[in-house]
Each structure stands twice: as structure tokens, then as C-alpha cells.
Image 1 (tube, one colour):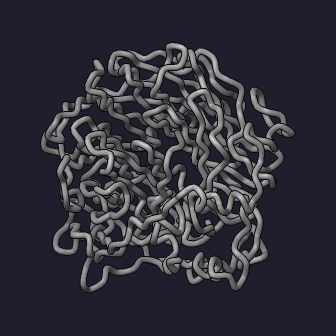
Image 2: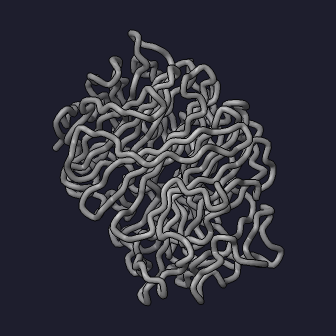
Length: 593
């Protein structure tokens, strides 16, 4: 087992009272496929041929727009920013030490002036498969210069042999002039060009270490660029080095939508591209995001047409998507395209605002390449989710995106199925549920419980994928296994000895702690949601979510940490690829047919 030295440094890795419309509390304890023992689950990764492969093994460095000097260590393995070694990055990327990055020109004094630092902490990940070559994979991730300062760009890692090796990686260039680039998500077009949809935004640090998002030409880091943007970087098909990205359009940065002033804040962007050459909307790019005004949020979409050389047409003017609710926040847009060229997305509504109660999910669709949209009936409503503020039991990481959406690839009763998975809290424990629609989103099946743990612990943050033969996979984070025992090789390798102070748990280091450490799991289903076997453990070693977990607000606020809103799940042929926060980087597992 590889020693977990800098802990989150090695991730992500590629491998790997209930409410209306929901099962009763009693039903939530038994899945549709029964329970399995903790021992059977612990061994299921080995018995099912799961492999774990490190993807981020090189030294990546970049010069941040805004440096951050605080160090929260040695507890939890924090170590502050680390200067790039004298030998430099091994990735071949532009580290910014010789000249400012193009978007950093125009920064205010004191910004964009520090030396390059190592990108050593990670959270939140995505993984995509090239439709022209199923062995070509690109993953992206939040790539932190400072976990304490929540200071990061987006990084990528690339494989041409189905995830066995990852020879190219680095930060995604083009938007270094903002403090952070966030929310990793990408998509390949039909020609094998890879599009990363990015949210760059500005902030600076106050004396106490907290973030200020003030818009002021004299105080903000970089008045030469908008405060926040939705933007794109394209990696052209055939690229082989870390720097081969197209980040401009019409002579400037490739903005889908810029937001130069406070009061309209973009977030939760997502992207999909129609890669079916027989589709009437072939190579249409769908970029979606939500705009928050401090009280409400509205979902938006913009489209463009991908070209074979990695360029694209102009982005269309953003339009508001129709929804079934007109109150509070609509967000979490997760678009997918069915083989007939229809683009679908889930829309999550928080009637009383996120963090106060419950969520409702519906779907939208467009059959004409995104020009017009139809809102469909509610799929699930009033789902209680874990607190966005308080986080999960015993630990300090807060809630991620509570639901996921995917579309089927094979017809059932004349329709391509739609699937929604979500985590729901009941009796202070979170479980994962799955529903489906077989009539184009008009009606939905009763929820089924996905996780099959016998003990009452948290199962959360699901992500859906559907293979070419229609097999449905739901991956999720899983806390059924206790943390490794003191003195065991697993405890040493997981770095548990570094976890010495926790505001929500007194028994640190958490040797043998229940509902504390995390694994990654997956469950397979037929298109009709008949389960194929039991949950399978993807992470071959349990990990501690406290270690190097990025601090969302301030180094002075250690009770709000972050492991990500979501993590990756994608299929290629008979293989399922999952990227997740873990001691190991890559999990591959055959899709059961």
C-alpha cells in the first residue's frame, strides 16, 4: 500500500423523519437487493476485480493570482503553500515564474507577484471518455495551492491506455488571472476535442484570513478582468503536452458569459455535447449554470457549435430555462443528450433556500438544439437533505450536491429512460435513493434504496452513469466501514495519526471510529432498475475526510471543510471509471452485463 504522505496530495485518483414521496424510515433500512455484511462489502472490491491507479503523480506548479501564507498544520496534515522545487514542475506546464500569465497582466500591486507553488491538495473531480477513442480519458479536479485559503485552479490528467497510466497532467491554463477557477466539469465533442467549462472568480484575503469579494478597482486583485465569468478552455484532439489548450475566442478569453459586478453570481456550471453523428443536433454544445442574486437563483443555458479543429461558433445569448417552481433557488443543472438528439437536464429547486429544508427535482428538455425548452412535472419533492452548515456526523465536511441525473441509452417502452439518484436524511443518517421515468419525464417510479449497508451510517453524494448497453451505475460515498484500527498498516497508510483535533469528535486519532472514515461504492442496475448484485467497494483503502480537507471560509473556521460537491462516474464499453477523493486515484471495474 502506498504511504499517504501529503494525504490529499495524491487525489483525486482515477480508479474511483423522511418526506413526501419517499420510503418510510423502516423501509430505508433495507435495499431492493437486501443488505450485505460489512465483511462482504470490504472484500467486494477485490472479488469484483476493482483496480486503483494513481493519476496525479507528477509535480505541478503555478503562480497564484493571490498568495496565502497561513498554515493550519500540523493537525490533519496541513502544511500551507509549498514553493515549487528548484528543479521546477515535472509536468511541462507554464508555471508563471518567467512572466505573468496573460490574464494576470493588469493586476493590482501585490498580486500575481509571488513565486510558483506546488498544486498539492485536491477536492471534487470529473472524468470523461473520448467518443473517438474509448481508451482516451481526461479528468479534471480542483487543484489547490492552499487548502487553508481555499485557493485553487482547475487541474487535469490524461490517459491514452484506459486509465492504466496518466502521463500528462497540469493546471488548465487561460484563467490564472482570477483568484480561483472552480467546479471541474468537461465534455468531449464528436471530433475528440475536450471542452472544460470553468467558473473563474475573484476574491482577496482580509487580515483574519477570511475572503472578501468586494468589487473595488483599488482593492480587488485584478481589475483588468471581470469579477466572475463562465468560460471555456478547449484541449484539441491530438494534444500531447500540458500547455496545448485553446483559451481564447474572437481575440479574447473564451467567455460564455461575463459577470463584472456584484449581485449576479454565477455558480454550478455544467456542460454536455451531442456526439451522435446521426443526431440533428450533432456537436451542439450545451453550457448551463445558475445565477444567484442573494435571494433567488435562476437556471441559464447557452449553446454553440463545436468545430473539428477545436474552435466553436459564438455562444448564444444566455436564456432562462423554464421550471415548475418560481420560488427561491433553482440550480444543479446536469444536462445529458439521448441518442435521438434530445437534450435533458434536471433542475433542483430549494423552495425555502438551500440549507433551510428540502429539495424538489424536475426535468427540462429541448428537441431543437436548445432553442426552445419544455419544463416537465416534478419528479421528487420535499426531500430532506443533510445540513449545508452543520455537515455530516462526527466530521466537519459539509454537504455537496444532493442529487444526480442521467439518461438511458436504450429504449424502454418507446422512450429513453431518465434516472435521478439523491441522498436523503432520515433519523440523522443519509441514504441514497434512485428513481426512473419511462415516459419522457411525465411520471416516475417509487424510490428504491441503493445502499445495502446493514448498519445505520451515512451514504451520500451519488453520481449516475449509463453504459452503452443500458446498464445503470450509481456511485456514492460510503461510511459503513470503521476507520482502520490503531497499529494497522491501513491506519498508517491512511495517515490517521495526523488527525489529532476535531471540533465534532473527541476520540482523535479516530482509530476504529464508526461513521467517520469514507469509502467509495457503486451499484449496478438493469435499465428497468433490477439490481445486479450488491454494492461494490471501489476504494481499496479507507480514507479520513478530515485530512487536508480544504477550509471553505477561513483558516479561522476549521468547522467548515470540504471534500467536494460531486465526483466522477463515466463508462466506456464494459468499464466504469470513477474519480473520487481517496487514498488511491483511479478505479476501474467491469460493467456487469
